[in-house]
Structures are given as C-alpha cells and as structure tokens.
Length: 329
Image: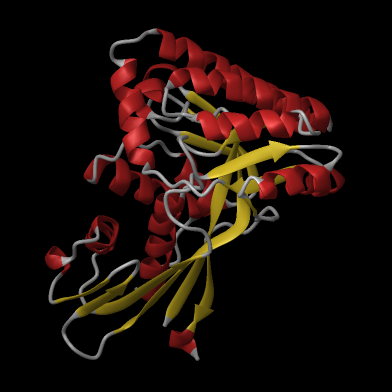
C-alpha cells in the first residue's frame, strides 16, 4: 500500500492569469500558497482481476477503459499501469470550494501511482503531467496554478510564459511574517459549492467577445506583483489592502464571481476590522478569505453569526509527498 498526501492551495495574487486564453497571449504571474488541508490517495494491489475505486462513489470495473472517473482513468493510462489496483481518496475539504481540489487530486494520484511502480519523480514532472492530463487530454478549462502549488507546496511566485513554461520561485518572506500571515488570513466556508470548470468556461467565452476582460486581467497581474513585493518587504497591511483592490477587479470579470450574500458578508467584514479579502478560486462560492490585522475575534464571530464556517489553516512547505510506503515493510 502506498499513501500520498497533497495540499490544497489558496491564491494570494494574480489568480486567473494562468488561464490559457490569457496566459497564451500575455503570460502569467501568480502568488500562490499551499495550505495544511490535504487530499490523501491510497493505492494498493488487488488480488482479483478488477479495479476498485473509492471516491465520492465506488466503482468496481474490469478495465481502465471502463472507469467512469475521468482523472483516475486518464492518470492510470498515462502512468502505464498494467495491474488491477484499489484506489481510495479522502479529502479534508469538500470539492467545488475553490481550493484546487480536483487538480491536487490529480497530482496526488500521479505521485502515488508512480511511486507504486517504483518511480520517484520530480515535483516539476508531477505538476506538468497533471497539467497535460487535465488541459490537453480532458480539455478542462484550467491553468497550471493548482498543479504547481500542490506539487511544490510553499508560498511561491509562479511565472508562466506564453509557451506554458513555468518558473517556481519561493517567496522571500521571514518566518515571523509567515506566522503573522497565518494569523491574519481568516478563511470561512460559505456553504456554496460550484464547479470551477463551469465558471472558467463562462470567462473563456466572455474573453472571445469582450476585450475589457483582458484589461481586467492585466490589472490583476499587476496587483499580484505588488502583493508579492509587500510580502517580501514585510508590509502585510498593504498586502491586505491590495487584496481588497484585487477583489474589486475580480468581481468585474464575471457576474457569477460573486452574489448578494457574498457581497453582504464581505462588506460586513470590512466594516468590522477586515482590510481586504476575496473569494478563493473561480468564484461564486466556496471559501471567503479575509485579511484582518486586528479584531480577529470580532470578524470571526460576525461571520459565524452569518452561518459561515471558520476554517483555520497553516501553510504547507512539503507539497505532494508519500507519507506511507507499505511495500517496503
């Protein structure tokens, strides 16, 4: 039995500039962070000639071609698995909440499958293989941020050129400011889930008919780079202010980015101590991320009174890793 553990991520700046309709023309610049919320993938040998797959459903099938779950099917094909396996997945956070769970799943599954076959591959290969499967094979409307954030871990600056080449640079931030950032970033589950693919397909269609969407992403890229400078200079308050500016631009991209409830909660948080914030991921639900330097208890109490669920986290610096190797015991 092999068990992989792969972190989810939060986007701290430049989110969306990795989407192909923008990145292929202008390149991407993103500030991203892996967090201590994980997807665990278990891969083990099956005694009979069937695959058993446990995720939100259970499949027992006789061949890879019969697998309904697209990521599991295509990851098995890509790695070149030739023997029936039992695969289980467990996630600490529900799918469809904006933390990149489906792409973290792909990275973690590939890591476990490669390791099961006796291969230890680089984090770069894990991220690129997951990107190829999701973007080129399954034709999903996603970029590369989630795959790289979950494979590498850390608080990172991702630069992606027009050809898709990714450069990963850990952010130069002090240990003290990492602790402050963990304290001041407050994450709340809205109770809404939504397919990121649906939201991103809508944005792609809009990009084909509305040139203004590119100007919004130009600004989002610039804001992300300013946010990076704030982290490196230790100006966390200004970082929080840039989060607010970022969210105002993000809301202009699509009508499905926010909704009246999200707007109400966000304004309530700003009126009671938060400096900035955003919906994590493609938008429309999932997690509301707020930045507050003071009044943490007040902000948390008010959000919980609104029915939101506070979700504490720390940053992850390991990325996707094998946490149990039962083949060598």
